[in-house]
Each structure stands twice: as structure tokens, then as C-alpha cells.
Image 1 (cartoon, one colour):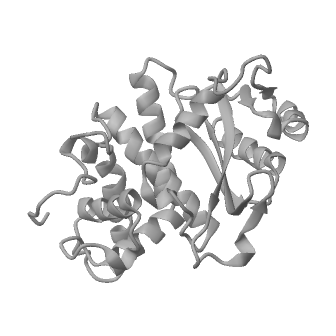
Image 2 (tube, rainbow, N blue to C red):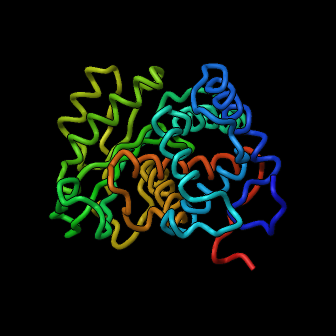
Length: 278
């Protein structure tokens, strides 16, 4: 790896050790199969550092600093790893590692679901956008389902006009395919009726958790605060402050990368720098 001044988003040795085997195996598999043509010249760690830099700072790919690999190369790896499911696999592996580290079983049995509507940038196709009338937002909607530790189990990105029920059904399908052990889900009132019925057909008890009407102002809502905290973790990555991605699937990948960044820090007992840090 080329010696340069480190960026705050760079992987530490401990964090790189957690994901290096998966990426090295991917490259070796392609080499053995004769895929990719010429010999790779860029260090995988630097490629991942560049992807984290984009995810954390929110810059466009073309604005990557010159001491990182060329943006065209970094974007190619980003797109190829997305298509090959590398980010999904890393998210799954790291979830199990962090759960074990926290004294939990590798696979979860309970989950929490929520959605978030966000504005889009000017380059996002109109056909993939919509209006969330309730929140008065023109853009896209992110649906996520987490375990009770707040670790991402599944994610979907749609137009903001898509109902929570439609998103919730899709999330339950995705989550139960990956984690067939799921038997419980807590949701807000937006996911009532259809999601509850669909959960029952999958063997998942979906419970609607609402705010106590007797409590005025802000209050922590049982169970649901976990997924809302996860959304807060994700929003520390400026690429997610607004949806900049042309494709909804690319937007979902950016969410997975932000979660991977969170997971490897937790697994390595390292903290995430924020504006509060000196």
C-alpha cells in the first residue's frame, strides 16, 4: 500500500483484518476463473478506503483525492462488489461477529422495522422518486429492519410515495430468507394490518408499538428506539444525508457500506469520529 497521510475514514489494521479475507478470496476466485483480464494493480485496502471516503464525506466519485486510487477504478470495484453481493455478505458476516461479541446467538430471532423519507439530488431520475404526503418530502423512502442490537438485517429503497405496508412486506420477505430464525418484529402504526397479516403467514409475530398518548413531547418508544438509533448511526455518513444515487439499489448499497463501517468499528472496539471529537 502506498504511504500517505491517513484520512479519518481509513481502515485501521484491526478493521482491515476483519474484511480482508472476504475481499482477497473474491479477487483470487476471479483470477482463477480468468476473469478481469490484466493483473490487478491496486491494493484492495486502498480501494475500500476510497469507498469509505465517499460514503463518509458525501463527495461525488470524481472528487476523490488524487492520493487514493483513480475514481473510475474505485467505482468499478464498488459496482462489481455490489453486483457480486460482497457488501451483503460482509454485512451478514459482521452481524454474526458483533452479535457473538455481545453475548448473543449468531442469528437473531427478533427484529424492529422503520422507514425514513429523504430528499433526492437533481441527478436522481424522476421515475424513481415520489411524494411522502405525510412528511411533505419529495424523494425516496428507505426501509430498514434491524435486530435488537440495531444491526441491519435487510434494506430496501423505493420512491417516497410507496406505502410502509408495501415496504414492510418486502422487508419481512428479505429478512426471513436470510434469517429464517426470525419470529418477532416490532413496528410503528404505519406497518399495521397488511404487514401484521403477512408476518403471520411467515411465522413472524408483528407487534405494533405506538407512543403513549398520555405522554406529551418527546419520549423513548419501547423497542422502536433501537431502529431509530440505527438511522442516526447511518446519518453520520454524509452520502446518506440526501439520496444522490441514480439507482435505488445503489442507494441501498450505500446504506450497507455505512453499516459495515459501524460494524467493523464495533467488532474492533474502535469508536466512530463525530463532530464532537476534538
